[in-house]
Image (tube, rainbow, N blue to C red):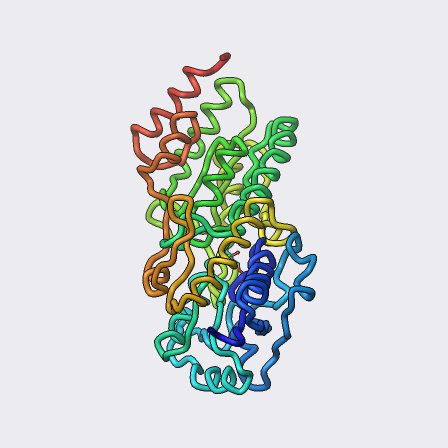
Length: 374
Ligand code: F6P
């Protein structure tokens, strides 16, 4: 049994991180009699002059509902360098980090993070250091787990934003565009679009055409609905186009919402506005589900370490927490299946994805015609 383990959080913060930290500490200390050291600012905390903090059940008391992470986080840093404009995890300073872990008396590691953090954690495992990963991202784009904590809270925030935009859009007969996060996947847009009654959902997995957007706006107009709500994932792109970056050098997605607003206003003559929800989706208190999932992931991660597992990540599969190899967890991102049930449901209830297919365009127009006045 390990005497002392380390815990760190990496990547963008997500609601539920503190719930996971608290569960790790309470399980490690209370159930297994281990000591816990918090490594600050992701893997940066074990490089150079290390910065760590002793974690006790007392020191994690009260953090369950708190947003952010008490350990701090970094989504770039010494382990991820930009090479030719892309993040590269080659040439990581693993040896220096391992030497510092040894000095600190940390015998095993729990790394909580997204794709990048877990890929780094896997390198520690490859060098023989015991490590268990805990998945986290509001984007829900990790392939090996059905859900990550942070995602449900992000959907709640985006849904509330859509509800609020609904009433102002209807009052002014406007087109409202809500740009949400999600990197190169449309999970947040799809779920919030369904929950918040969007008329159009634009996701990276289904490239859109402006003609199809306009057709939907006009079909609604003709059926008596003089406003339209559009939710667009930050990574969405036009057919034949590429995603838009707010900051190309840092590869920060953004800007597509405003672009759509301009084009739709030009093409329809209707007043349009864009709201970029941004980091509001990540900040603040986790909802009940994310507190529960973070807690369960944290406790299961310690149990996995204590039972001798390493190189694995805890994952939610069919409602149960299992462990999967980190290599599998980082291999691919999970995209929205375009022929999946949720996309089909959205189409069935009249939501358009603005795909440029004639049949789908026809369906959108037919849906408005069939349901006008009903
Ligand atoms: O991965 C989480 C996420 O919030 C993405 O949805 C978004 O593209 C990105 O992080 C933004 O990162 P930053 O913290 O650099 O603004």
